[in-house]
Image 1: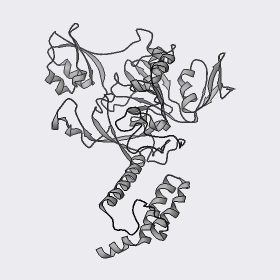
Image 2: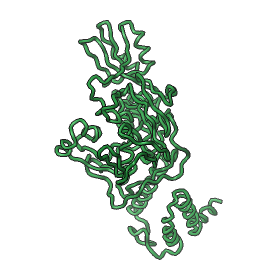
Image 3: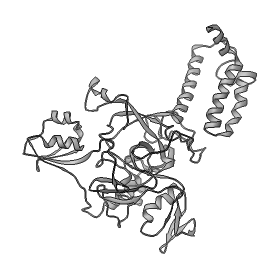
Image 4: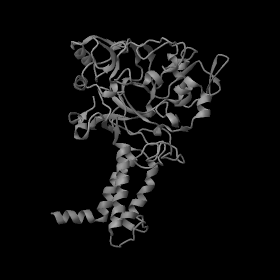
Length: 447
């Protein structure tokens, strides 16, 4: 029986049939890339007629040497891993604390591309297994733009749902200041002036698929209304569903004594988050509501208050979306704001244009100008605008330590990368050796 199966597998027509079937199902039927039909004659020649030596790095019918076997294995691994990474799952790490305590810095994730449908690369010519820069470099690009492709997403298992944890390309990452890649270029321009930034720093421009990856929770889907009142998120007028472990900044006052470091470790407060001001006898800590309740029970703690940020300087509009002096909003008191939906039409005026300016001019590629109070789109007067894409509102569960939609606005559908599925490894930077591994989080589902 085993010998029969081996003979079937070695039959070139059988192998040709299997490879052709997979090729048609994957590239032609799923990806609908009909130009890939030109690959069928190549597959036929490779397995059947063998007129061309497609494996040019080795001589035909010559015995395989160890070097040739290694080259064969390497090429197969790169191609297979690249296709899996593009169409099915991709590894991702949580570098910051913006999603604590639902997700922790040091969590390693698998991100499902098929959850919302794989997004085909805008820049397909790039160095494998890196994102936007070459290994061991912070500035040398890992891609070339000789070939550019428009946004296209192939069929997936569903669409982005409210409360999903989503990985996406940073919407304001089209221009990056090399000396400060963490900060938004547009925020720096609002703070210091565009001319100053341009004249004193090095700038790079990146296509959509090569912008930095962010991970946040989708709290608003197309058509939703979003508002934050004293830190409480309201979606369509109702408090957000009780999902994840939301964390806020608290002021914790004591009777003059300090809190033992072991207590903080038991609570799960990282060392870098333990800020004590001896002058006021208070800690400033990021805590969940449950952690705050535990601290209130400590005999040395006299008061635990959640921060409620207000605009005391009148300059928060430079940081908070929609970046208009007419909107005196903060991260704790924000909105209401409507999340645009594909096909929906809004009336445009001077008051609401700041909400949709970047959508119209950047994400959907129109020439937007305002002349003598009149709004012009592609040179024509515009009283309204119809959206060409769906948009989403993303927020971190660490509400006071998350650069999210409250700062830079809507996330277009063509920026969505995939859904965070499960944690395969988690490392605690405050621990050493095997203690670094958070065993209880390994292979846990992202919620």
